[in-house]
Structure formats: structure tokens, C-alpha cells
Length: 298
Image 1 (cartoon, rainbow, N blue to C red):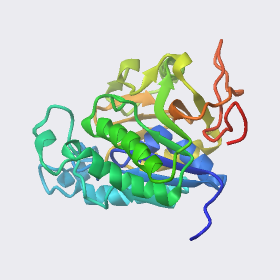
Image 2: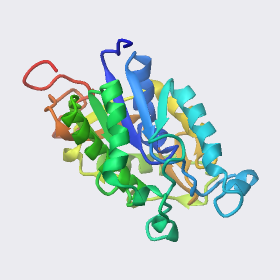
Image 3: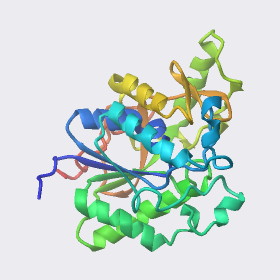
């Protein structure tokens, strides 16, 4: 068996583009430092709303070829981030995008929301046992903003973690994506102070940002500012879903919001982390997903 790098990170995401928006700078940083970064994407994102008019024909209610197109966008984004190991859960197209919560697509037998949890988690456990990550990243229990595929990805990630532990590999730490409230508020202040006309229809609010938490709930702040350009390029690669303007972006709702090159995580399973130098006012955040536990080396 090929020898694995010393540090190995696994990310579990629902659709192509979620990984770059949430973790693009983190992925680029660790990949550049020689870690094995593995991305598992659970659907092709077939139900996504297409932004560019020239690509509108790809949508589910027209040609229904958006999923195939987004495979290429994901590959291009991963090339920008320097990530070579990216896979689809159970293989490309195994689980279809479920659409937003409450739509009829939620009830389709082949959609991810309807997937058998142990079956889907079994596919993930196979990846965990192959690459043996020390750190796993996914969404919180609400999927960040209530999308059924994000919620299901959270469930699959935690169940896959359990199944793999029972089969010989325990992931040392499991993290959920989050962003501290103070950071999001500062990002919107920067947007307001930018003094320019954005190509978006309006400005989002803090409430529109998934996974905002009180500062004291954050565990790790990964400084990826040296890789901000790579994150920007990765987001631009997902052109069917994201419009980028400088340090701001919009999704299909056409509401501009800031994106962040320092990315934040809340630990929910595994070994305790020491506090680190990434300190918010009145608190301490660790600055490395792989830091050794407070009681000794990992």
C-alpha cells in the first residue's frame, strides 16, 4: 500500500461549490503544505439554480444536465486549490440533489435526503478506512442553513465516523463548519465601506450566512489568507452557481456577501485541542486542525 502523508484531512460536502465557499482556503493551505486533502461530495448538485443566462438550459427543468456540468466545475475548482483526491459518495450520480427543503424533489426515491443512512455512511466509511484521516470536516446538524442535503451530509459524516471507528480507524477529530458572529459582522462592515457599485441585486445580511455562531463556540481558526487567491479562483470555477466580485460573492439570490480566507471550525468529536494564538477578544482559538491534544502528542 502506498505510504500516506503524515497529515490527512477529509471533507464531506453536499454539492459541488460548498467545499470552496466553506473551506477553500483551508484545503489549499493544507494541500500546499503536503497534507492529503480528500473531498467527498454527496450529490452532483443537479437541482442548483443556474446564474449565467447562457447556461440556463442545463437546469433540471430543461435539459437536466447541470450535474454533469458541475462535475467539470468541481474538477476545475480542485485544480485551483491543489486538491487531487476528490470523489462522489458511492460514485458520481449515486445520490441525486434533493432540492431545497419542502420541494417535491425531497420525496424522489433516488435523492440524497431519502438515502438509507447506513448505506450512505458505509460508502463514506470505505473512504475513511482507505485514507485514514485524522481530521474530518462537515456541516452542523442544521446543515448550516437547513438544506436537506447538508443535513444529510452531516448525518452521513457522523455515522461514517462511527462505522469506521468500529472497523479499525478512529478519526481523531471531527469538526463542523462555522463562522464567528464578530467576523461576519466585520465582513459586512467592509462590504458597506467598500464604496463601489456591486454587480449584485442587493446586499445579504448576517442572517443569510450559514453557520454563524457566538465567538466562544469556535474551536479553530485556520488562517488561509496566503491562499485567498486560490479560493477566489476556485469559486470562479463554479461559475454556474457563484458570482465573484473581489472579496465578495453572490449565489443565485443575487445578494452580495463577504467570503473569508480565514476559515472557522467547531470541534464536535474526538481529542481535545490546545488553545492557540488565534485569539478573539476574551478567548483563545487553536489555529491548526491537526494540533496535538492538550495532554500530549497526537
